Length: 631
Image (cartoon, rainbow, N blue to C red):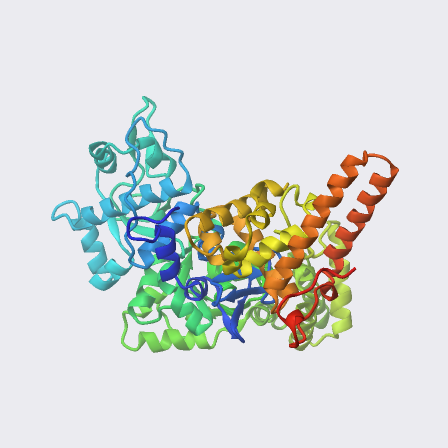
C-alpha cells in the first residue's frame, strides 16, 4: 500500500502505533529476556518458550516452527484473518481511521461467506439485539429477566447483552430493510431457511449473550429462554468457519488481562455465573459453552496462564466434567484444579452465592482450596471404597491407574510423566516402578499407536524453488533487509543483481519485489518497511528468517558482507557465461556444476566461512575497504 496524501500509508500509520510487544502480550504471556521478550509460540504445540518478540525490529520469530513476521502477521496467523481484517482490527485498537472502503455487499452480490463477512453479520445482529433490549415494548420481558438475576447495567454493557424479539421475523425484517444478504446471516446461524425458500429468525424471545473471540469479534451467540415453557433452556449458534464450540470460551475477551495477571483461569458452568463473578470483581472467570474442558480450550489458556480451576456446583455433572478433564491435564502443560461449592456453601452456583452477603469471600476460598485433579479423582475413589477389603481396594486402584494410562498418560512429556508418577505414588502408596509397569501394560492392551507425537517440523525454511537460488544471493537480500540504507549506496549493476527476476523462488521474488517497491518510494528498504509492503504471512515469515540469519552470520559488518555476496554473484555469473561459451553441458561443465552444488550444501549446513571476508585491522586503506574474497 503506497503512501497517501498525508505522507504515510495506512499500513505505516497502524504499524507505527501498534507496538508488537503489547499486541502479542495480549495474546501470549511474554517474559523479558535481555532486549527481547519470549513466550510460548501459539502456532505449534509449544511447551517451552520458543518464540521471541524483538521490540527494536517490531517482529516476532519462533525458532522451532519457523513462524515469524510483523504485528500484522501475528494477528493474521493467530486469528486466521486476511490482511485487511488484521489492518482494520489494529487500526480500531489504535484509534486510527483508515481509508474508507465499501460496506457489506447488498442482496445479489457475491458474499463469499468468509470469516470476515460472518463476523460482520454477527456484529450487525448484536447491534440489533441490543436495540431490541432497549426498546420500551419488545425488550421489557428480557429486561425483567436481567433485573431478576441482579445483573447490573455495567455488566449489560460489558457483555453486550441483548434480546431477540418474540416474533419469527424480527431480525429477518431488519436484514431486508438494510438490504443485507440474507444468505450470509443464514450461514452465520442467525436465520433459517423455510421450505418455500424464505427465511425466519433462529433466535426468538430469548436473552442474547454475544460470544466473542479473544480480540472481541462476535463469533456466535448464546441464547437463554425468557419464557420458562420454551425448550431448550439454552441455544448456541451452530458451528461455522468462525465458530468452533469446543475451542471457544465465553468471557475470554473480558477476562484475558485478569487471567494473565492472576496466572489462573476460573472455569464456571454458565454465562450468568461468569457475569456474576465479574460483577463481584472476580474478573478471571470464564465459561466453556456447555462442554467439558477440551484440548482446544486448554491450548488457548496455556498461552495465558499456568493454572485452570474448574469451579463446579458439586453435583454429579460436575464430577463427570472433572473426569473428562483428565485427558486435557495429561496433554497440556497446565495445572488443573477442582473446586466444588458444596464443600463451602449450600448455594447451587456462583451466581446464587455472589448475591449473598460475604459470597465473594466464600467463592474465593473455594477456588483457593481447590485440589489437584489426580487428588480429586483418587479422593473420590477412596470415598467409594470406604470399608472395602484390601483386594477390592487394590483392584479398583489398578483399574483407575489403567484408565489414566488410556486417557493419555503416555502423551505427557517425559519430565511430566515422572512428576505424575511421583504424585501418584504419594496418593496411592504404591511404588513408582509398579505404577509405571501398570501404565505400560494398559497402553499395550489398548492396541493403538499412541506414542507421543514428536515436535512439529520447523516451518518457513524456504519457498518453492528456493534451493536453486545461491545462498550468497539470498544473504545479499538479507543484508539489505538488515540495513536498508545500504540500498542507496549500490550501483545500478549491483541492484540489477538483486532484481526479483534473479530469484527462482516465488517467495524470494516477492521479497525482492517489495524491496524494489519500498526503494522506489524513496525509503530505505529495511525489514520493517519491506514487511509493510507484503501481505502474505508466509512471505513475511521468510523475510524475517532471512534477515535474522544474515544478521547473525554477518555480525557487525553487514556492508562488507553484502559486498562479498555481490562479488560472489558476479563471479558465479561470469563462470556460468564462460561455461556456456565453452559448451558447458559437457563433463567439465557437469563437474563444475557439481562442485557449486556441493559448496552450496556446505554453506547451508555450516554457514558461510567468515574468513573469506577481510577483517578491518584499523591500519591503512585495508581498514576502510574490505578486500576481495579469499579462497
